[in-house]
Length: 355
Image 1: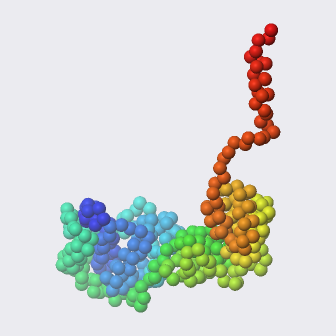
Image 2 (image 1 turned 90 degrees about the vertical axis):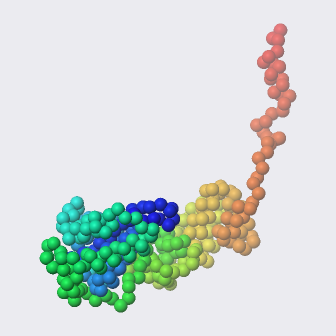
Image 3 (image 1 turned 180 degrees about the horizontal axis):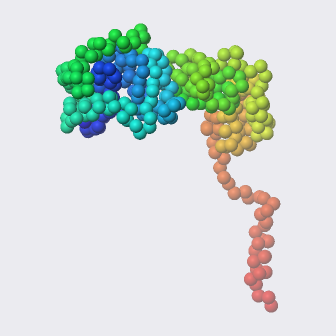
């Protein structure tokens, strides 16, 4: 139990354990919460503590590491898979609900829960980790293991030369997700837009991004495009990804704009002619305004934008936002409204004395 700095209350932590198969040397790490990146970072920390990387990992089917459990063909989390590839490690997930397949690490987990951590409370994760490291060094590594009948630290000294050397640079972490290529041929990442190759509109792709780059990949992991990050609202479209002719989907969109209103169609044609593929989203924005405010109102706003020579979606949106609402008044003259004297004569006729 560790006190959470945010709430001030004690809460249970998560214990990560990596155990070497020959020497039974273990690395135990404490964290408050887990995620795909935390799971991968724990492996890196364990490799650094061991002074090298293992060749094969037998692991549990946690969601952070294994997306689809299958003893023959598991689906590994892509971030975790790339981290293991960086260290040249092969992952072998266990059978589902069969922890005995990795009994050595299960014993190490129970050993830590029952011996150094049982019933204790700590004020921070750092304090708990320091306590656990001291116990690991002074007691767990110096003990005579019950199965091997040898000291753990002595066997680890024999096993350490077999570990792989660590790469010179640590793994560069990224975030990832699935995206659908929009009508402008781009995918969205943090409100910025990055192009996919021609022919991918409407298809789903994998996207990886960090502070410097955005990568667009197929579902099989093949790299389609790599872009430098840009600011919110901006596009990254190289000339090779700009279509030589207007795509059919864009042509259909422009036809919708002309059907909504003459001035709306002219405005959208100008946006597409000037902005190219990146203007498709602005055309969609104009059509969204037509649905919200009505085609007639937006057509008048588009006419104003064209007359003032500011034909843009942003001007039309702001014009509609600042446009005073039209007051609702009763019409005094209308063909359907008859003279009051006619209504009076009708009432007298219906309610008067027939004699």
